[in-house]
Image 1 (cartoon, one colour):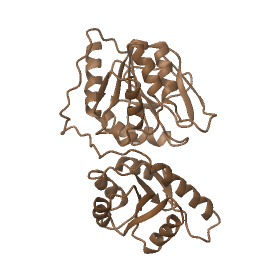
Image 2: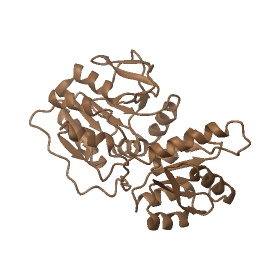
Image 3: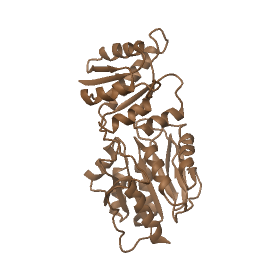
Image 4: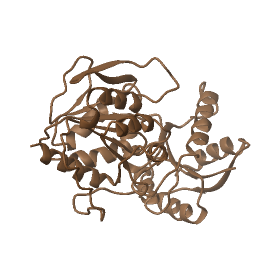
Length: 344
């Protein structure tokens, strides 16, 4: 049975959500909170399996409440927004630590109500199984107590690739903010993201990064000191040592963009001269590709459990013994810096 905490300042909408979930055989309502502060208290007391979170609330909005809850309790939070949802609100939800965001089903008389309810119930059921960990906030002032591992005797890193999914954008933003303004190799980011959202993500990351942030495009040449983001709804890889291949994704049941596909392509052209990092995300995408790189002698890293929003992808890689190192995001930044200094 999935125990739900509903958070919404509208009594009417709380009743709508209560009626929706109460009719689902494997769900039950653990509690209802009408504001952020009550939600934080009830989350700690009730320890629900999942929280549905309204966005616009007085005093503390849904983003602030989500962030506060995840600092004390590892619980999946799905933000349920009004119809004015946009790319910025989705990224704000991810930055706060929500595992997903969906529009409110509307009222019973709406023509799409039944379809929207089905989507909401399915999303809640799927997200309730996600392993979530307490928030780890990356800052320049508060460095982790971990020490990034020393480099091997001979280092010649020519490319760095980061595979990431749930919780990715805020982690990436913090990491890019802390990297130096120039690097002797490119950084490629494979973030699971729907088609059409990439431009917003690139623009968002570009505002905080001292390095230029660009979209991968078919036939483009990789340049050092540049961050490239795989576009959503695509299959991104390398078709030559310094040339991107980007084609539309035709499969509907696979992660997009695929971390495994990109990792395998850099393994083909770079092998031991690559740094590959697998970070927060549900599922197993990237684990097999990381293993192939590990076997080729590349530097392979997974994010540590405590700092991950969802530990699915890193944990799958660890099961395969695909990682040489387990690091926090700030340790990964330090490691990239060391690789850059060793190459200069």
